[in-house]
Image (cartoon, rainbow, N blue to C red; front, side, top):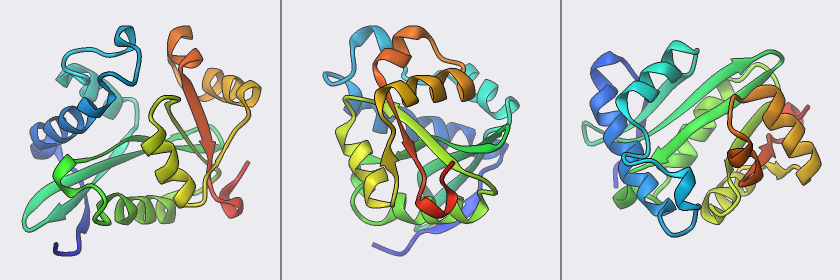
Length: 168
């Protein structure tokens, strides 16, 4: 596989971004509680809301097509990694790692990421990139402070704290 080129996503990329997010999120089915999953996982309106709320997306382009996306959102003193997805066919080939490296270079403060507790593959990915999992009580406080999510999502999620040099 060709090394990915990381670039800013634009309005014209929204259909491809939605396709990537919703295809990759199929992995959640059977792992994440059904009442936490929509169909599609992320509708176009939700992505538009996230962008309007300040999530800046970058894409990993391979052979002229987006193969992965990852967002970064500044919330107060922290940067949140948001909506990190790689198409199934390109997973395990460095696409997510290239995106992560680019976003970490863009981050100006401590970096946090929230994900489903059942998404062990995602947790393993973040740990591989130097993140540590916050204890449950700290995770709940962070989720309530920096995210706008339901109580149900809080009880089924974890938070990982970025590498030591960016930690809170």
